[in-house]
Length: 443
Ligand code: GDP
Ligand code: IMO
Ligand code: MG
Image 1 (spheres, rainbow, N blue to C red):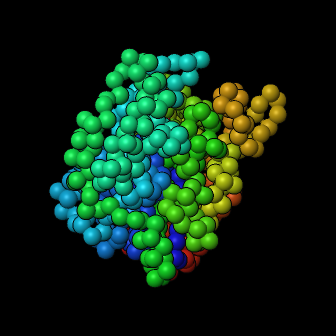
Image 2 (tube, protein in one colour; image 1 turned 30 degrees about the vertical axis):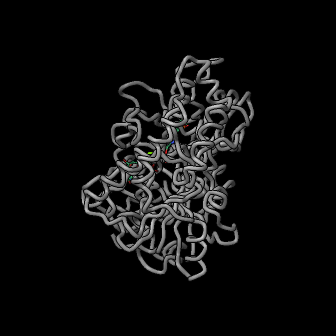
Image 3 (cartoon, protein in one colour; image 1 turned 135 degrees about the vertical axis):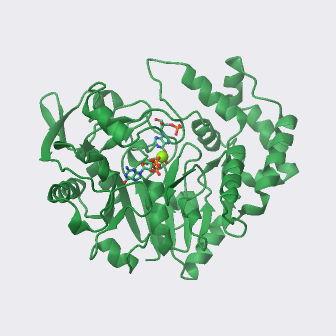
């Protein structure tokens, strides 16, 4: 299939990294289109765990070209560390990693702004961001005072760009808060030093991607964060600052919607969320409750910040909403093994609010905080299932659970992940995905 988007369908950390690594075997290019080092995408191969923050998870397939798109925001220091860690692991990046010359750069003052905003609590609202400077960098982009990768290499544009940024309301706000946003010439020197390290990878990725598609190459688009963290469609303001949906990839990579062939949604078998904001199915049921059991079994601690993730049952209302926003052709359900040994599993089929049943999330976070999940209970399975590789081998109850998730989402479940390792994956033979890939996915 010429192009496929892999999109997080919940609140992030659905296992996109694992799915992209697995599927990228069947593609020529893997391109990321939004977010930055707020993302933490884990890939485990033969028991070795790799955490990626900027670099697309196709990087572990030697012949695959990897692209950091124009819609992303880059922390040059962290990006360099990531490149070096991958090179130490024996991966060759020269000639196959490409960084957009239009991507925006996260500057120290953006991280300061993020940290300052998070240290305040206005009207009781604290977003619980990753503190990576993501929001302020997208703010600068929208305010047209941002610094882009191409600026780093032109002395004539970098200094004026920094002067504008440092005279902008963003920088003034930081000064008013008693913080020092820095001084243009010193910042320029520091940035150019870092820029030299990424220079070999920088290119016009819009031309690259479109020319590869013209040539008949197949591209996998890697989403970051999740549909319920989307700037427009998540529980605003408890969202990230970019468009996390399939629709966001066109702007974030410079690709026409006509060139996006298919969309795959990645769902955890339950829900997690890191950071603040509504999560209707959250299980805050104490140290011996189901929430803690999910956290322990799923090792639910943030890949980027190490924060414990909030855990709860699968939210069918949020899932159907993600399906509406992305029109997934199929779903992949990850971390199914985490539910092994639960006597019963629950799924939320509606929200109840003031005596009424809702099938769509309400528009404000304040109302979303008040909804009560309406649950359906299904029998659990004993497990373990982590060693299984065929759909038919899954316990009957696990298959019934997946069938119910498929109904709630509104699309078929074609792939299941039963453990973190690349090998612990089941592609349903005869499914839409297996047919479209044209081959079984080999681990
Ligand atoms: P991403 O941000 O969507 O790429 O997901 P993360 O990597 O942040 O979080 C997913 C976590 O679950 C990682 O620690 C993965 O190694 C792990 N993981 C992925 N799939 C499975 C699975 O099927 N079972 C288990 N137990 N862990 C998984
Ligand atoms: P991946 O790609 C889970 C959350 C933060 C916070 C909100 C805003 O690994 O799925 P930000 O720093 O983006 O301004 O924070 O979004 N968040 C994520 N949660 N996975 C992620 O990425 C996330 N990226 C941001 O916790 O609630
Ligand atoms: Mg993650």
